[in-house]
Image 1 (tube, protein in one colour):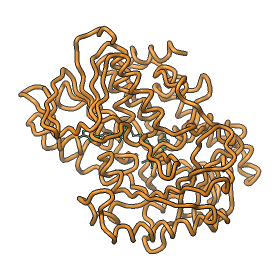
Image 2 (image 1 turned 45 degrees about the horizontal axis):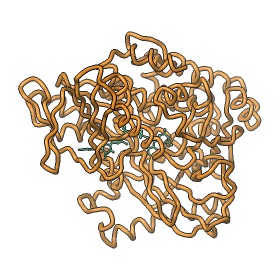
Image 3 (image 1 turned 90 degrees about the vertical axis):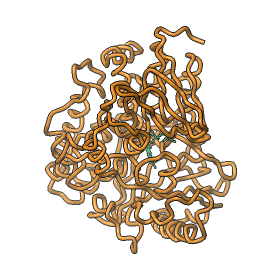
Image 4 (image 1 turned 120 degrees about the vertical axis):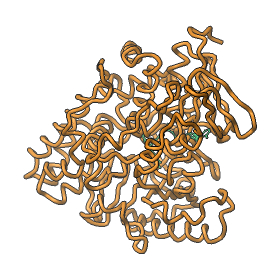
Length: 503
Ligand SMILES: Cc1cc2nc3c(=O)[nH]c(=O)nc-3n(C[C@H](O)[C@H](O)[C@H](O)COP(=O)(O)OP(=O)(O)OC[C@H]3O[C@@H](n4cnc5c(N)ncnc54)[C@H](O)[C@@H]3O)c2cc1C
């Protein structure tokens, strides 16, 4: 047990990445930390499950910027994650393969390599590709927290990067419509919406993976175990099967949380790692104004996802050391969120699971395609595993459609499949509480940048928010969000200084 630098106790509702990273930072700085998780397994989207001896990741399939000195490496070092995590580098010449109607284009690591590789397909476009990438790099450099610079305001930015749409930026970079499509090829990484998703989201994510790209050997739950163990070693606790049903307030502050079990936990500070709409459901107090409730409830969320988890027959499927993005045609990338259910799916993302370094055959894979909550809404309120035969049929049809499309792109795949399992946006809604099963939470809109920003602060002075709805989603976006939230209690520059001191 550590001796606490302060006698202040903080309760964190939810053990997603944001909750655990806040827990780590605050425990390291002397707070007494209690993380309360409703599920039996901690981690939110970092949870894994096993079927037939194969482990599947549910929401963290690859990470970037993990070479020594790169941004995520520095955060992982600070979070004591490096000794516990083994990484497998994706093919540096094509960490992502973008297939437009079957024509395949590689994304290669490093600016020069990226530009040169694509210029081989688009020789007239080399200069435009260079200019495109210069902006992508500039966005990352101008973001204080992504470049770990001290700042009075953690929220960067050049208004142009916030107020310009990602697709508008790509369209201004080149007139070549096929190249526009290729550069939009990683759109599922942020579930972008045409005319809305800001340029900075596309740029930060593209830059993050272009620096270096890896799979986590053995699965993303290793991150969860490592962070939870560190929190415990520092005297904190991560408690599972503890669903918070209410955040209790007096006339000025939050004072305690009530659990489904009937228990009550008091603390000095509270952090919600749930979706903001879920947090509001826990609050019955005049401290939260109706206008705020209304604004949060009215926010649009990014789309949901249908996943086919594939278990291969042993020793049959050669390991694919790239991620495979498929679009039916040049117009699909941005239109896919509005897919036609009768012609499902028109795009997908396919990735192999990495269970060991130097993997030769894949044991498992995930095939993911957008799915809107409307498609599964009629089963809302039913329980996983007993939603009924019609739900099973619906999932089977969707899976077969997706697998047939995969087979057309990568012939021979279906023959290697031993069994497959599926999840829908309803699964995510039930497991993580994300609004309408949304993949990445609240949709940022470049036309309403302020209105679609969720603050880490609430109207209750000792209640804060963290997770993918603050700052941004993804491993780096959420870690930075947790730095912003912890910065409310510790001072943001103090946290940045600690991270920088780790080298
Ligand atoms: C399909 C998919 C694939 C992805 N792939 C990648 C990837 O390859 N790389 C990448 O960087 N990012 C990826 N992401 C994004 C990334 O997983 C998320 O942005 C991130 O994990 C979200 O973390 P979070 O802190 O917001 O918490 P969440 O994961 O949303 O977790 C919230 C937690 O709060 C708990 N909770 C909710 N309500 C309560 C309550 N009342 N009481 C107690 N606990 C509660 C939930 O059970 C959950 O554990 C992916 C996401 C999805 C959906």
